[in-house]
Image 1 (tube, rainbow, N blue to C red):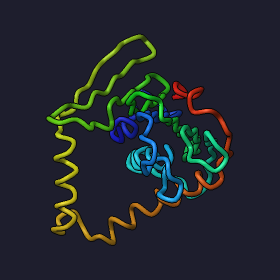
Image 2 (image 1 turned 180 degrees about the vertical axis):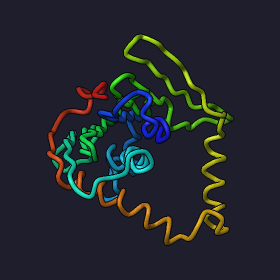
Image 3 (image 1 turned 120 degrees about the vertical axis):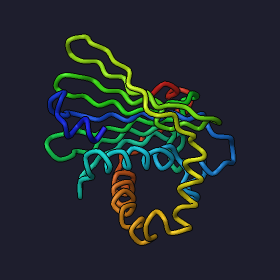
Image 4 (image 1 turned 135 degrees about the vertical axis):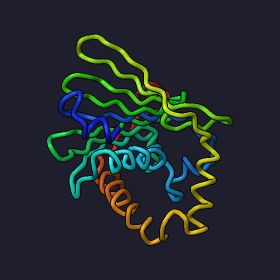
Length: 204
C-alpha cells in the first residue's frame, strides 16, 4: 500500500478508514477489565496505527475519539477515532465488539477505492491477503498477495527478535513509542458515551 500511495497512479490519497470487529469477550476476561487495559480501542488501535506508520507516517499531535461504554466506569465496547495526517489526509478508525470478525483498511484516492481485506488472519494454515481495487471508471481488480501463515509469521518475529536478527530491542522500542503515544493521546481525550452494548452491535 505504501508503494501504491507513493506511485500516485490513482491520484492523491484523501482518507484511510480502518474497521475492526471482534466477538464480544467472555465475562471476566481481560478485555472487559479496565485495570488490565481492556476495551476495544486498545485491542485494535495498534493495528490501525502500525498501518499508518508504515504507509503514511504518524502525526506528532492531534486526534479525536468517541468511546462508547455500557457503564460509566466500564471499558469501551465501541470506539470511533480520527487522526489528521500530512497533506490533508484523514485517517479514521471504527471498532467494536460487534459479534463478527472484521479487519480491513479502505483507502480513498482521487480515482479509486482500495480495500485491503482480512488484515488480521487468525487462521491455521496459509492464506493470501486480498486487495480489492475499484476505480472511478468502474473497473474492479483483485490483487492477491503471496499466501502467508499468520501464526508462523508471529512466532518467527519473536524468534528473530530474541536471536537479534530483527534489529536491536531499543530500535524496535523507538519505532513503537510514537504509536503508543498517539494511542494514549486519542484514548485519554476521547469523549465517553454510555450506550447499552446490545444497541451497538453493528456500529462498524
